Figure 1 (cartoon, rainbow, N blue to C red):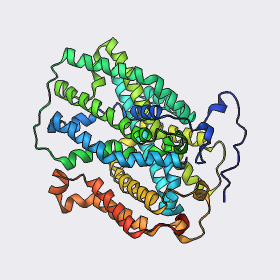
Figure 2 (figure 1 turned 90 degrees about the vertical axis):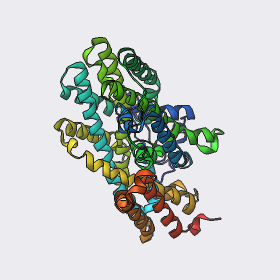
Figure 3 (figure 1 turned 45 degrees about the vertical axis):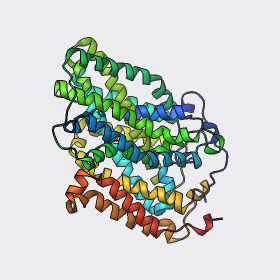
Figure 4 (figure 1 turned 90 degrees about the horizontal axis):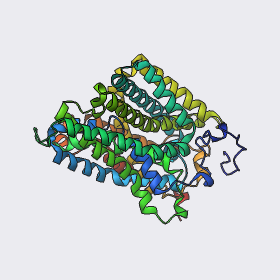
Length: 450
């Protein structure tokens, strides 16, 4: 069994000493300093992407009132899962895919780690492409140049890990808010931005599915990867604030920027507010800064989990080394940037959207296992112990429950299309079915009960 309790090896000083090398190991107590406010800002900035206003265009035909209600309902659906993952990271300072070893077995967690590595890298490339194309349109400069600028900045930020990412988010958040606030002012001052009214009957299932898969439930499994740097639950009295911080941080930008996207769609025919600055030099600079920050904020939280997920997969095969985290970050970031430049990822966006259906059943089963089966009692070292039974390598209850939920998530609409379009969010239903099957099948492990 790997010894995770020994003191950390001596670190290098200077700039190299600031590079994050914790990898998949437990975060040391002296690095667990993130407060509820800092945790909220991290997720506010991660969620405030340049593409977040797209929500306003996707739900535009339902009208603003029902769009707001759909976003609020989506927040209520994702509130508990996001909160529980936040608590998980504070109770055991490990990334979610390490904890998933007890839910799916080491081999199951390995396969999910590989899958999520490439899904997150794919979104990194796609967002880098969006940034390059948008900044190219605003500044009338080469898109390839912007691909490299945005890609390299993101790689450098992620190399320095969550400590410096949190600093970056905190101190640039005001700049982002000012940029988009000025763009919103420009929209209302120069265009007729009327209150968008409904032009189609409200389909709650479709609307909520759009929001949760675009935002809160797509982020949820990554929450503990951040909250493992938060103040431990045993040393804090602000547990309710930590529970709420991720979901509040994720959903406020969805609501505010979704409204901005809807009004921009109504006034200009385009949801992308940043493009308002394409033909005006001063406004263009403001838009370019806002877009660059929005993309970098969000995409750092694609590359960072991609790196950690890859390290989980590697750790299944061998012991971790000190510098594998920065090396993995550089390789994945450069590969994602190159693929964005080549345009390859533009052809796999549909695949990435389908893979998103995997995340909700995966997440819900993990939560049932953590709360009902493990009873939140598994010691940190147990996640790194070599399995002694087949159950430790592969959990059939979790795999079968996941498979059923995935089938429902992808094809359930073919069986009862009206129900899942007008009433129920299909991926959430699939996730709940997975959780119920697993909860009924699995039992608390004897070694974890009093």
